[in-house]
Amino acid sequence: MKEVVDTGLPPLKQPFSWAVKASGNLLFTAHGPVRADGSIDTGAIEDQARLTFANLRQAVRAAGGDLSDVTQVLIYMTDVKDMPAIDGVYREFFEPHYPNRSSMGVAGLVVPGMKIEIVAYAAIP
Image (cartoon, rainbow, N blue to C red; front, side, top):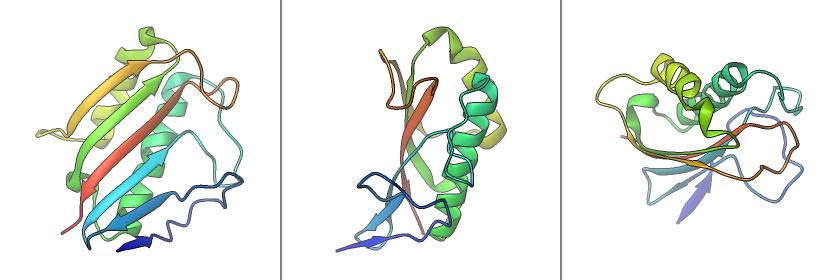
């Protein structure tokens, strides 16, 4: 059984949901630097990462949890040289014991200028 979570994030133009809960407490979610008006931030990586993780936090809270419930984060970035900046922002949102994580460089993301996208999984109590 799955339930689409009303995250309060802007309506999507593509065929996917911001967050889906399954089996009552497992949360599956994906985010990028999407502003409240639905536009994409294509500025500095720090700003894009901060907005991306803020969107994740909003989705997890809407599902009844907080970022300490996140179990895994997959980070896709268009320039691996951005990893130190992303790590700095990541530490603003997560505390030890950190979620399991994988980070990978990709040739590009759907929106030109978009430098980061994440997938996250959480176990909501």
